[in-house]
Image (cartoon, rainbow, N blue to C red):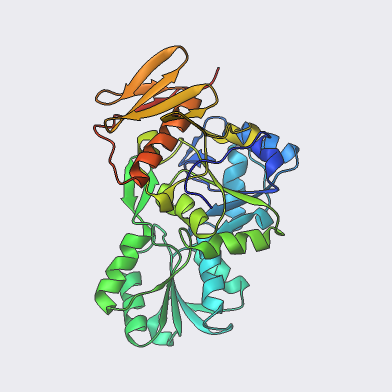
Length: 348
């Protein structure tokens, strides 16, 4: 799959059968709603798009995720939820069959996923577990990680639900599971098996759980949601309601690049104009991006804007054109100079 933008004359909801939707930063933001998320998801479902909510957050059970989504006006059932805890247990099963004893480092999400798969769970290395499954939960502390270290040192297999170094909260970025896993790795000098994004397995298993079909991944993080989509050869839609900014998208290396861009989940309900090469630039919809002397110049809405120095506001198509031009330049071994912060204006 080409590492640049794709296009479709039909709305994405008509182009795809299944949307693999990230949660935090896409459907909600911590305890806050994400603009246009609920209306867009429910409208897409109403038009026949099947959904699977795929998350690296291993702390919640599927029932808890369903309840949280309902609080934001998004209807789902437990079959439509696939968490990194569930993915870690599926990965574990490829190496250790149930009903083996597994040490839990995490919360209800990890505990339930293991129990439902038939494993015997423990919180103590004294029970001689054959494996450790480690996922983020606020309850994880020195004692829990030390039990993991004891077990792994004694030969237990270490499986991490995901390797995210940070966790977004209302106050900023807190320690993620990857940072806690790193402490155990430092103590044991043994590398874990890792589930979750950006590894392709989580998308492959989520699609299988959802009954298959032509799928698109949707996310806000380039190095997890979209890197995982690239590894899975899946198209992906990036939204600007979470972690990665428009500037981050323009600077993304090929392995992190989305294939569709929008400000939010309304992108599921709209066509995406395909980039077209014109002279020394790129045309997307009504916007043209040209590269001159290592800088991108944009023409849209009757004005010309150079991406350099001060922050700029772009239309959605100008943003898309800028991304294609920036990626084209990077693929030629050149670097954008002095790229500013970019705001993408909501379409009226």
